[in-house]
Amino acid sequence: MREVFVDRDVLSGDDEAELAALAARVRELAEAMTLTKVEPAEAASVAAEIAALTERLKAARRAHPPFGTVGESGLDRQIANPVTGRLNPLAPPVDIEVSEDGIVRAEFTLPAVYEGPPTFVHGGVSAMIMDQALGMAAAATGTPGMTATLETRYRRPTPLGVPLTVEAKASRVEGRKIYADGTISGPDGRVTVEASAMFIAPQSAPAAS
Ligand SMILES: CCCCC/C=C\C/C=C\C/C=C\C/C=C\CCCC(=O)SCCNC(=O)CCNC(=O)[C@H](O)C(C)(C)COP(=O)(O)OP(=O)(O)OC[C@H]1O[C@@H](n2cnc3c(N)ncnc32)[C@H](O)[C@@H]1OP(=O)(O)O
Image (cartoon, rainbow, N blue to C red):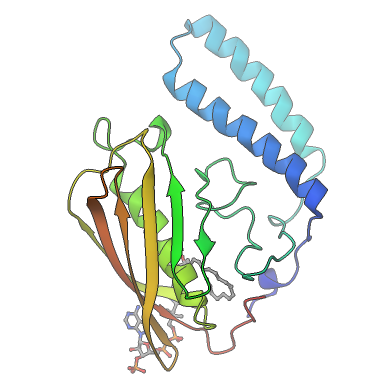
């Protein structure tokens, strides 16, 4: 495995909480930016202030995103992941729980920055969330892997701004191949997206925890 898997700063809970709070503010900023109606001069003024803030953050910079302290499931160290990462402003974030029987589940709501067709979630965003949920379900078997195939079936449009549920579970492990299936459903319980994936464990996989 490449060095990037091991050469990471590991944050304490307090450091992680402060950076997670910062990411939450940046997430709000992104949504406010997408929906703002301010005049061009005000937009330019805000852009200059944000550029100054960006310089302050760049004053102390890591080579790679940090890892968090690993929790019980061992699947939560990538705290800057683009789906679940509380430290990643691009992540919704989706707070995925893994139960003892290997079922992966989360409730989440997607704001306007994830819009594809008007008022609905972009299909690539749904696929990204499914990839993560299915990958965690695969890893819950004890054999994490790289996504080799991901099939998404979009049954209905997925609405923005309402509570959605993602669920996934591994169906079987065949040597280095792990198969998993899952769904995203709307608040009425109707499935909007179905997905199936096959993950392949690297020849020399690092442990999940
Ligand atoms: C991401 C985790 C990786 C490991 C991490 C370890 C610890 C992490 C802990 C926890 C993780 C927690 C949660 C995970 C959450 C989310 C997951 C997101 C994952 C991603 O977002 S990941 C990015 C997208 N993903 C890629 O970037 C993959 C690029 N790719 C490759 O890295 C290689 O391509 C690889 C490794 C896939 C295979 O390479 P390889 O050399 O090991 O494979 P090899 O040739 O030995 O084939 C062996 C058998 O698989 C068949 N086979 C191979 N490839 C296939 C394919 N694509 N489709 C169908 N069958 C395929 C062959 O036909 C043969 O089959 P057979 O044995 O039956 O002949």
